[in-house]
Amino acid sequence: MPELTRSIKIVWLHAVGCTGCSISTFNSTYPHAPQILLEEILPGIRVEILFHSTLMKAHGSRALKPVREAAAGRFPFLLVVEGAIPVGPQSYLGGIGGGKDLPSLVEDLARHCTATVALGTCAAYGGLAAARPNPGQCRGVWDFLESRGLEAAVINLPGCPPHPDWVIGTLAAVAAGRFDVTRDLDDELRPVMYYGTLVHQWCPRRASFDEGKFAKKLGDPGCLYELGCKGSITYGDCPQRHWNNRVSWCIGVGAPCSGCTQPEFPDWLGGFQEKITDVQLPTIGEYWQQRRERGR
Image 1 (cartoon, rainbow, N blue to C red):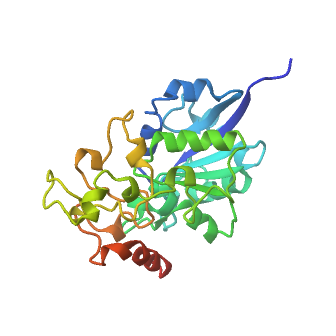
Image 2 (image 1 turned 135 degrees about the vertical axis):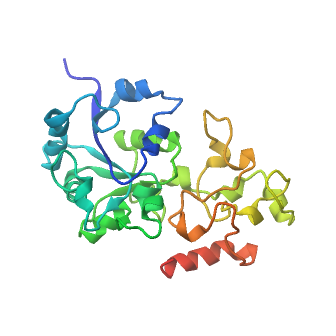
């Protein structure tokens, strides 16, 4: 009898990061973590995570066997990288199991995988791991692979951490063959279905912004722009999706948006409660686009 369920193999590497992206992903409410790991995420499709240093039971050579086989191109798989890639002189400290240094292992796996998913802002753009002074010379996955001359298909899922829906939904779409990296990604390689609109566009405080009513301190009514809100330049569907099983989100509890899905996070956005720019508000999007084109 032919097998009715197709398995999508995943090699999930941890680079320079805090593992918070894994914690967020497996706090998914639907499907729950056991469903993600053990059951079908779509009819006829299940995920098989071959390597995940936090979740797996295996250890030693048994744990490393699928990584080595994947790096040799012996089967199709998705590569998920969580955390930034260190390219400094001590990058060998990130090696796995006494084998290759982390940059070389990522390069070998990226050569053979179906697609590479950069999970979290550190993996996507460097993020906190690459913040000044960046002693490990960390960089995002796409930037690293480009520097090695690889034209790999990379999907960025930024966020500090990313919403579990963004992760599970994207993996499911890729697994089902319903995701096209040439059509479904924005200019920063983010899935348009999750990162296609500004936070500012659907913010419940948008009316206060339009009327020029700005909060002076946390807890005040009004727009939080003067208190460091980055929602006017940040892409993500947080206002509609909410977090923690749809309970609330940053601005919903009175905190400014930190801009964590953006390539500029955190260094170029300033402090969490620091106003981002004195540029006139109607032209803020244009200003940041020009800044990015100049190399930030």
